Image (cartoon, rainbow, N blue to C red; front, top):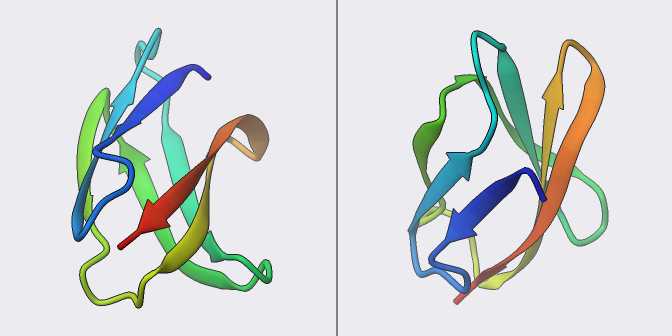
Length: 79
């Protein structure tokens, strides 16, 4: 990964640490386990916090992209 997500598993707030990001516009998309798009995040910086407390417990997939190019993805466990 070119980023780290913590804490994982999480009960709510999630911190995304992006590495090697310099003047690059990154976006994130959160999907549920079935692949349904739940939320989009734009303008991610090298350190971003997102709140998942409104989502039920389960497994989610966070996909990070830059100008439509895949940057990385991560499985997130919400407790």
